[in-house]
Image (cartoon, rainbow over all chains, first blue to last red; front, side, top):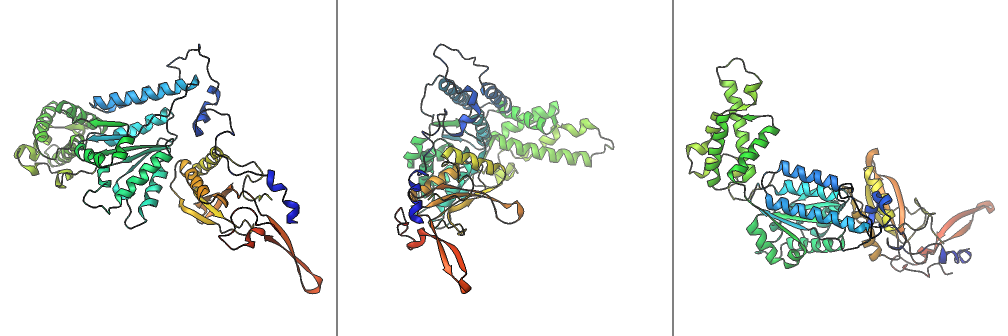
Length: 354
Length: 145
């Protein structure tokens, strides 16, 4: 019986064929899915309406939101705009059949704490998704703990699992310099870096990795891992905010929470920022958020302990000058412990972004 | 002899893109993905070996396709299938499983008759792949009498 069956095996099947060759469809992988009608190549003389092009509108919208929600950060925004433009033009070129290699979009975000690295990474994932560069547009945010194992043989599967989860989206490695410990050669972090490099190479089409951390430490991190540095095309530096920008951020944060500064409070808060910015462990926008949180606390207890029996909406919304001026920053402007925020109490100057 | 078990087994081999689309469907249903392999395709052999770990929190099919290709590279002459588990029943339930790799020559099966009391005959399937011990079954030639 088995003999009778054997001739079948020759034509019935073949070993797996990779994607190529079997389908004439354009574009790599699944991305071609939504563009089935646009798949016909355009002639050399035909023109495209830039604004009608799919994705263009979405891109503009995301860029506008970026502008509206993020104060300052001009060099960052400029670079993101460049990347968006490149991806859009790449897509247009594809429609004329002009092929070019897929741009390398691995990035490193460096900057002081609280300068918006995580927020921008989120926006970046949305943007890349809107432009069809990545399929899902989710952000997988990890730190050393999620990547590095605890014993021999634990690291590789752990890292691979995280990377697999991030495929089709963006892998955001916060405080990436912790992956590499100079003082310990047997540290498993090195293995993580090797596997990351390998996956970045193997899954070029599906993976965008963003390394984030403080500028000086990232510098030495990249120096000790030249292979990693050369694969990261965009090194984006997040500048510290000026007092004006911080004040603007505070207004935005308050508006989000349906609070308002009274005119006096506004000037008080600027005074507060002037003092706080000079103190150690100032974490930019995060310190502003913490200061506002404490102002809310004081406002609440002021309302409850005050003589006023009846309060209205205006009282509930308003942050008064005394809520700000009660801060310890004003009492002992030179003391380290002036800021009672949890970020300041951590004490080692390394702030984990919440 | 072409083994037809699991979904899509009467269709031509799925391309990587088609595999990705099937997995994407499963992920949208909230199913978990696993890659399994065996060198004994007997229909009653339900316990295939697991390749790496099952992928529970995958969002995008690219991770599964990556594992399928890694498995193909390591075991080019094994049967490899992708299984999608639906955990919503409170137990692991295979919702979808399809073969994504086959040996270059599939050894096939033969019918065995067993003489029983009162001239009864019992029939069973014998998988030629198991003629050799595990580890020596690679490739063709297994089905030769």
